[in-house]
Length: 403
Ligand code: ASP
Ligand code: MG
Picture 1 (cartoon, rainbow, N blue to C red):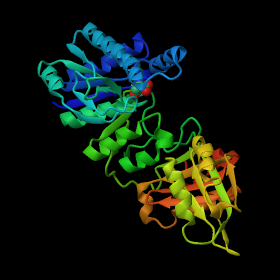
Picture 2 (picture 1 turned 90 degrees about the horizontal axis):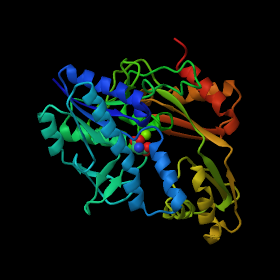
Picture 3 (picture 1 turned 60 degrees about the horizontal axis):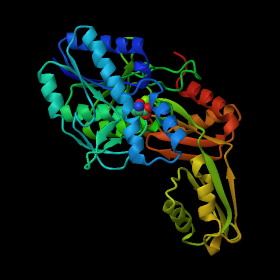
Picture 4 (picture 1 turned 90 degrees about the vertical axis):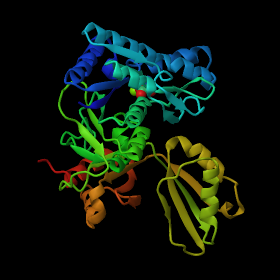
C-alpha cells in the first residue's frame, strides 16, 4: 500500500463527464489498496472567467479581493469531484487550502507556501477517505485567502507530497508526457521516459503548460519524483527526477522562445565600468537579462548587446536613455524580430561536439546566428524570428533523428 498524490488540471475536470473520468482514475488507485490525496484546479477556463468578471467591475482591483475571488474556482471543482466519487460508492471529503493546512506568505496573487501542516489530511486518510484538496490556495498570517500565482496547483500537489512524504506524485494533464519538441509542430518529437529537474526547468518554454516552474523547483528541493501523464490514455508518462538513466541521448529537447528582444548599445567607450553601469541600471528596474555579448574594443569604442523579454523593452530603453555620460554618443536600438532556439540535455556537458553539431545544422539551412550562450546543460542561439521554426526542425533532426 502506498500514499499517492494525484493532481488534475483544469482541462481534466472541465465538465461533468471529465469530472467522472477523474473520479474513476482516483477510485481505481484507491481500490488497488492505496491512500489517495487528490489536488484539483478550477474547471476549464473558470479562473480566466473570474478574472474577466473582476475587470468588468474594477480594472484595478486589490490583490486581496482578487485572491478571494480566484480561490472560488477550486472550491467548485473539489466539491464536484467529491460528489462524483460518492456517486461511485467511495468515501471522499473535499478540503479548501486552509483546511488542508496550507500556510503562505502575504504576497496576494503570487503567494509562496511557507509550510503545509497536513494534520487534517492525515486524519481523513486515517478514516479511509479519499481526500480532495483545492489547489492554488492557502491562507496567510491574517487568515486571509491567498493564491499561488497562475498554474499554482502543481505546486500545491508537490507541497502536499513533500509534507506527507508521499510515495508518488502524479500530475495528470491533457498531454501524455514531456516531449523532445512541441509534438504539434515536430511530428518526430518523442516522448521522454525520464528527465531531470534541471532539464525540465530549462525546457520551460516547452513544458510551461505542462508543469509550473515553481513546482519543479520545489520537487527538486524536496526530492519528490513527479510523473506527468495523461488523464485519458492510461499509459505511463514522463518521470521528472534528479538523475536519469543515461540513455544514449545527448539532447532531451529543442525549444523555441519568441518572447525575446535584443537591445544593442553601439559605440560605448571602451573603458572600465561600462558594463557595470549598464546592467546595474537594468537590475534596478528589475529587468531580467539573458544573453549578453560585448564586442572587442576598436578605436576606443565597443558595442554591448543583450536580450530581455519583449515586455521589458520600453523599460530597458528608458533605463539606459540619458542615464550616464558615457552613453552620450552611443546609439541604442531594439530588435524584436528575433527568437531564441535552444538544445537542452544534461548529457551534453561531457560531449565536446554538441555546439558544433548544432551550428552545423543551422549552417546547412543557411541560418545566421546573432548571439550564442552556453551553460552546462543548454546551448542557445539568437536568430531571426522567421528562421525559428526551420531551425528547430533542423536541430531536432540532427540530434534526434527519426528512429
Ligand atoms: N486555477 C488556477 C489557474 O488557472 C490554478 C491552476 O490551474 O493551477 O491558474
Ligand atoms: Mg491550470
